[in-house]
Amino acid sequence: MSWAWFHKLGSPKWFFSWSKSWALPLFCVGCVCLFVGLVWGLAFAPADYQQGNSFRIIYIHVPVAMLAQSCYLALGVAGFVFLVWQMKMAPVFIKSMAPVGAVMALIALVSGAIWGKPTWGTWWVWDARLTSVLVLFLLYMGIIALQNSLDDLVLVNKAAAVISVLGLINLPIIKYSVVLLETLHQGPTFTLTKKPEMPPEMWLPLLFSVIGLYCFVAGLVLWRMQTEILKREHRSNWVKQEVMEHGL
Amino acid sequence: MTYSSFIRSEFLVLWRRKQDIFNALLFFIIVVALFPIGINSSAEFLAPAAAGIVWCAVMLAILMAVEGMFKEDYWDGSLEQWIVSGLSLPLLILLKVIVQWLVVVAPLLVMMPLFSEMLYLPSLSFWVLIMTLLLGSPSLFFIGAVGAALTMSIKQGAVLVMLLILPFYLPVIIFSTLAVKAAEAGLPYSGLLAMLLAMSLLSLVISPLMTAIAVKASVN
Amino acid sequence: MAFNNFSEFLIMGAHGIYVWSAYGFSAFALAWLVWNTLATRRKTRNSLRKRLLRNQNR
Image 1 (tube, rainbow over the protein chains, first blue to last red):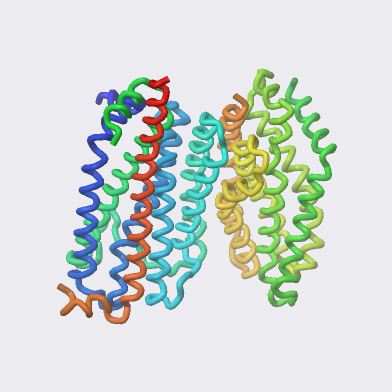
Image 2: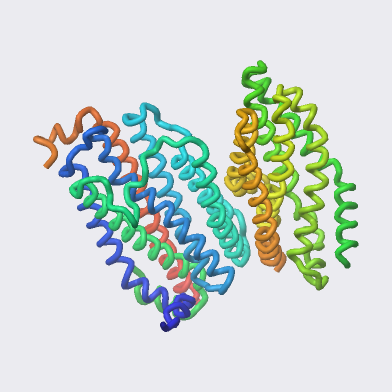
């Protein structure tokens, strides 16, 4: 297997031109899938026999919760890549991804609380998954606050990478520890190994919205990374050319 | 500079800055006192909550003590000395954290019998609480050292360190208080103590390396 | 179609307020994210371009 693609990722110029052709299509595909999944889930999927129509929140809650965790996983991997190989794009990725992940965690918390009210009768319980998403949100906010309060770019890159890697190591421990506190949440809707227990007309729209949200976020992050590259490389010639030629 | 002269000078610096350590301990006392005063001073509330109260206060006090750990070294240029000294930077950091741990945790442990009386801690779980403090607090110091190193170039970094590091402390407080609760209920608790020890050992390996990366990045 | 008419769709069997507030908040947050992304992108480009033009004229 050739590792050329991996080395190319280290070049901001190559990455910028590559991301220009991918960001918009990914974003549009994401929007369409998300729209299909949500409309299908909201209007056409049958109501749950226990929870009634309130279960329709699942079509936004589960995708954002999955994204919130995947984003952190990606942050940790990027941090590791930066600490080991000093790859230039990794800190750009961390910087662009952290706010997106924080918003995902926030939506998961709010939509989960709203779902909890009709289902469990309270807005909030100190249950394993809720607590771990809350911690995830705090971890994201910590990374963002750290990046905003340091001035030196070298230090910002290193600090964000260090804290992402530490968070990645700590996240399984946090999850294990909060499971020891009691749990009220229903089990995971999707697992890779088992067939879902829901009927297909209920989980198919969910699949659409999950895939849609992944593409949506990928597009957004590519755009944010472009902005970050422009900011960081503003002295190089290709950026000057790029800005003058396509000023939007 | 050698390792032993480094340890000696670290002790000496801490002895000169004993007011800071003293402040952290006073902070611990005040936080513990807030709970009976602010919530409920009856033994029915305090006895089951005692371990949790002590652990909350310990976490905050340790974070207060650790947060400024590298600041003075950063501003007076000692960190450059460490880097050019030819000694291993992670090892120096490890030694520094251990010295800090000894100096802060020893008085905390000495004060513990007093607090277990004030909070009506059941005598049966007192030694379990001491064990959780001994096994769990090293990881608090090691994780806190990373936060301190990342924020040392910021003049007012205390709140940032809290925001950054407290989420990492959650497993430690959960395992510790669960161990005390298990001991009170007569259930086995050695597994939870083992988890605390494992976390301390894991952070002992990882934290000096991460702290060294942060120190090098801040100094340049 | 799980609902007979549009008002039933809005009420969602007494759970409408929960479902729609959850979706409303999510839509608001996602829209903010998109707006923030595109606005900073445009702003960065424009300020870089302005700076370049200023340097060229000098």
